[in-house]
Amino acid sequence: MPEVRVEEVRRFMVESLVAVGAPETEAKRHADLLVHADSAGHFSHGLNRLELYINDIKNGATNPTARPVILQESGATAWVDGCNALGATVGHFCMDVAVRKARECGVGWVAAKRCNHFGMAGYWALQAEKVGMIGMAFTNSAPIMVPTRSKQSATGTNPISLAAPAGNGDSLVLDMATTAAAMGKIEVLIHKGEPVPPGWALGPDGKLATDPQVAFDTSRLLPLGGFEETSGYKGFGLSTMVEVLCSGLSGSNATHNVPPWTHNQTESPNMGQCFIAVDPERFAPGFTTRVADCLHHYRNLEPVNPALPVLAPGDKEKQSAAATQHRGTIIYPQRQIDVYARVAKAIGIEPMKIHSA
Ligand SMILES: NC(=O)c1ccc[n+]([C@@H]2O[C@H](COP(=O)([O-])OP(=O)(O)OC[C@H]3O[C@@H](n4cnc5c(N)ncnc54)[C@H](O)[C@@H]3O)[C@@H](O)[C@H]2O)c1
Image (tube, rainbow, N blue to C red; front, side, top):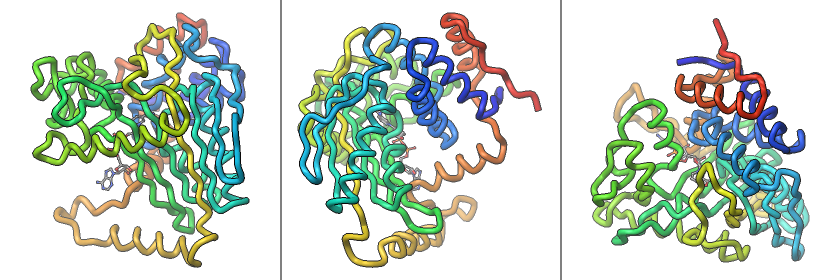
């Protein structure tokens, strides 16, 4: 598969967003979010999503020059209007407010309405972790999860994330959709021409879908855990927990009222997001040592297969990021490169240059 140098990917993303009207600062913030996802191996939430962000701006569903505003605040809390700005603009603003409040009060809790898609939830949790806090970030989404016993989609992939510092640059990072897999992973399977793993999605007949295009078009993802017999209601329950924190606190659309995310969307999705920062220094001394001890313990458990060591949450992404940094390139399916050659032509920028070793 073709490789593109990381800096060239970033250049392409920034120029694309600027070409459709984003200020350079916000385009760079958004590109950093997407490059982080691709570097960490979450190709569902990197370049794969850029075309949707571009089209949202072109169609007026996102306002790339808008800035979020605080509607109401107390020492530890803030209610924010995302003002329909780019996802990274709102994510950065809200977690920054949460961290400032956590410095003052020990905890900062921010809920925002009128938000757009903010990519990997864990990226925002890491913004707090980088300054020694526990970070948590959540978002609601479009209705593409089938609740247990339902024929219809109603809840979303509504991700949960938590990042905790463990000292010496290490961390525990849980970042997960509350469906068995994020929809973007099905899009990646379409690009690669690979089947959908069992337990991820239903087709129009209510049976497990194997064709990724059918799964994408049907938009009925199973909750984490799958069917009722395998405790799928817990994934459904977690998705509803995210709903309470996001639309419940912010007054945004609930997931079942969020319009589907398409290339022709003109309506703002008005999604809700929640950002929490907690200062561990306000609790028992030795927090990072205890997190480090957990990580050390898990990673040293005897594996079932010696070739597959036990991982802690966040380890897979760290390994991918280290491999990306070592190579200096990101590897994309040819089909995705072709899509962005067409996009580049349409918005009048230089296409991505393929790296030749
Ligand atoms: N913005 C949105 O609307 C939205 C919606 C859904 C998902 N997402 C994002 O999509 C991304 C992918 O989500 P996902 O649920 O498909 O991720 P995933 O299933 O690949 O990983 C989920 C979590 O499990 C951990 N993990 C993976 N393999 C492991 C192993 N063998 N042992 C221990 N831990 C392991 C990962 O480190 C991660 O913390 C996330 O960044 C999420 O925030 C965003």
